[in-house]
Each structure stands twice: as C-alpha cells, then as structure tokens.
Image (cartoon, rainbow, N blue to C red; front, side, top):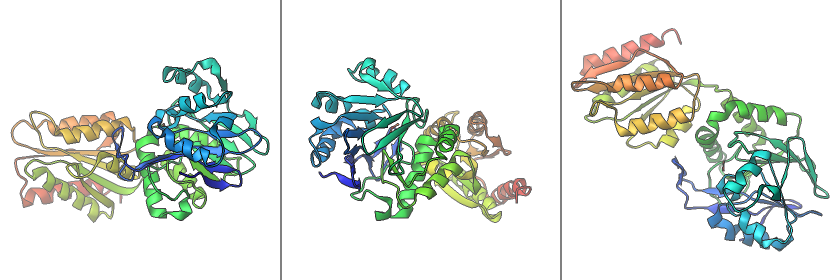
Amino acid sequence: MQAIKITENIYWVGAIDWDLRNFHGYLTQRGSTYNSYLILDDKITLIDNVKDYMAEEQIERINSVIDPAKIDYIIQNHIEMDHSGSLPILKDMIDEVEIFISPKGAEGIPKHFAIKKEEFNVVKSGDELNLGEHTLQFLQTPMVHWPDNMVSYCKEENLLFSNDAFGQHLASSERFDDEFSADITMEEAKKYYANIVMPYGRQVQRALAALQDKKVETICPSHGLIWREDTEKIIHKYKKWSQNQVDDKALVIYDTMWNSTKKMAYAIQDAFNKKNFTTRLLNLQYKHISDIMAELLNAKYICVGSPTLNNNILPTVSAFLTYMKGLSPKDRIGLAFGSYGWSGQSVAIIENILKDCGFETMDNIKVQYRPDKKILEEITKKVKNNLSEEK
Ligand code: FEO
C-alpha cells in the first residue's frame, strides 16, 4: 500500500473500495475510492480522510512516505463518514494536530465522533493557511454535497481539492484520468452527478463562479480519478449539468405484468424515434434506478408506465419515482401511461407524482387489458402529434 505522487510534494494516500456496490441506493458497479491527500511541507498536512473500515489502508499509504504521527494539520473538507470515518483514528495517533473545518462542519462533527467543537479551527471562504511552500485557500461550497462542504485550493500548484465535487465512484489501480478510459471516467462522473449532486445545481453554479478567477489545472476529488487531462472538460460538464441543459432525448421507463404496458412503451418510443429524438427504453425489472438517473440527466422527456396492481402502481415504478423526486430534476416534460384490467388508478398516480416533481405533463395514455395493433398505432400517432410543435 504505497502513496502515489501527484506533484513533487503532494501525494494520494486514500483507499480503494473494490467491493462497494451500494452507496445508499446508488449502484456502484465499479466500486469506489475515498481519496485522501498528503502535502509534505513545513507543516505536514493531510486533506480529507476515508471510511472507518479503510483506515488501515490510508495509514499504511501515509506510512510509506512519513510517520503519520508527524502530521501537523488535517483539513476536513466534508464531514460525511466516507471522508471523516478515519479522522478519530488519525487524531488519536498524533499528539498535537490542528484540524481545519468549515463552520457547519465544526457543528456536525461532534454529533458523529467524540471530538469537541472547540478542538477545531473554523475557516471561512477566503481564509488562507500557509504550510511553507504551499498555501491553501478555503472556499465554502454548501450543499455540494452537505451544508458543511468546502474545497481547498493550492494556488502554487493550480490544484483544487474538490471533495465530493467532480468525483466518480470508480475503483482502479490508476489514479489519473489520463491513465484510464476517458469514456468510462466521464460515464461515472455523469452518473455521480445525477445521483449525488443533481439537487444542488444552483449551489454548483455558485461554486463554479467563485472558482472562476482561479487557475485550475488539476482537480483532486474525494472519489475516483484525479483530473489532470480532462480538467476543463469536466468543469464544462458541471456547468451544463447544473444548468439543467437537456438534449432531444426521451426516456421510456416502465414495468409490466403481462406485457401490455411494455407494448405501450414500445409504441411511445416509436413516436419519439419518428421525431428523431434519442430514446432509451428502460425496463425497471432490468435497469437500476441509479443508472436511469444518469440517462435522465440530459433527457427532456420522462415517460413512466405501470399497469395497475391492487389499485396502485408496481413497487419498482414507485421506487423509481420516489428516488427521482428526491433528486429534483427540473424543467422536464412527463408522460404517464399504463394498462389496467378494471380499476386503472396507476396512470393518475404516476401523473400526479410527475406533476409533484414540477414537470409539465403530456396527455396521459391508458389502455384496458391488451392493446392491439390498431391501438398501438394510435398511441404512436397521438404522442407524435403532441410532439409536432417541438420538431
Ligand atoms: Fe462522498 Fe458527501 O460524501
């Protein structure tokens, strides 16, 4: 377990969680990393920590460079436990360590660990900490991802320790974006934004604006690969995603009992295809809700279908709608559809949730029992006609 050099005196000393598959509901099919960084300077400084069960790996990596007991400063950019879990362990190993944290972080940490608020040095936006050859500037980035978040900028290296921002859940032996598949890295960055950062678009825009006067060549996030090749590209993507910019793309998301709702889903997709939209047909029996959110990030139309089951919708559809609503996508257009046998409540239930999300809605579509060829053609025609003003 070795530290990995980023610059002459800055090292990655994090932990790689190869087995992680569930991050509170988010399918992390490629695992994750919890990144921690070490700056060797007059004041030896550790930036962020790792999950408690990975402390041993972090400490071993620090040990490959210096004795952890020699650390002078710890910067805790964020208190969520994937970045603070090993803090009490490190703190106990060091006789005298100063810990720097945001005001909200200092309030939150004592509720997680037996560390008193008074034991922290509270820093605000614009505060600087001189380490010797390096200077860290702090910038509060509340709600990217919790109220306490902040980032630390090293002006001598044009390097940003961005914590949750610009992260990816991705376990790899490679540490830099130029060493790994650019497509996979961006795919995971997009999925991460959709599932973690999406509700906080305005806060992301504020953080990006505050960083505008700083030269950023390297971004060291707290999850995944370090950006040093596609740095500008990921910043540009965050600008687009945070502004809710969508493409001519339609998602048709559904579950089905006897394939009637499935046939309707195909008919609806056909209408969008005929209008040259990019489409995705997403069966909730096979597609994870967190992967659907990644598709939803740049999709304008969100069509959701369920048959009626026990006067309600299928549990898979309910789970997806609950998850999507929590992530607050904005400025989308919804379409509810579904088949039914006798009572037919599912479509209204879905439509009400889409409206609760703040979506405009198209005329919903209900079919009793099985749609035949003629009904399916009518569905395609109806949706296509409703789109005619669009394209
Ligand atoms: Fe990666 Fe908000 O923690």
